[in-house]
Length: 115
Image (cartoon, rainbow, N blue to C red; front, side):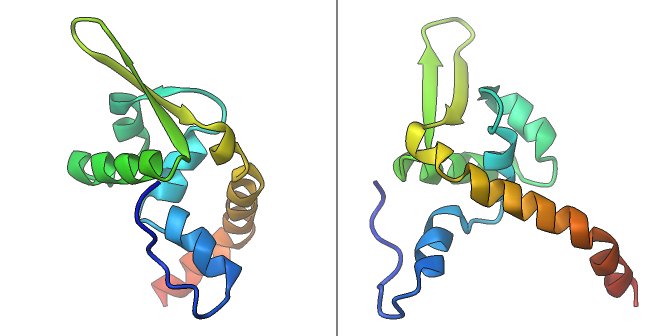
């Protein structure tokens, strides 16, 4: 696990959750790992607005927090896959709720951003 990034003074459990999934691209990365393992380049295609460096950093943090597992296969060229850990699977309802909220409010938010 990474060093704790929240001080707990607020007592808010949402703060704890966001300390794990609150990165710029973390929820999107996790969403793309819901159904299956993905290789790094596949994730870069699915998260095109993230730089490779940012994606790498976010994956490292998720791995350090025990939310994803990184599999390295002894092949040439190297093959690396990422998947949700058992602990990471506990976030499935959270990720699906985020998706559902986004789908329900996408049009409203898009309209407001154009005003």
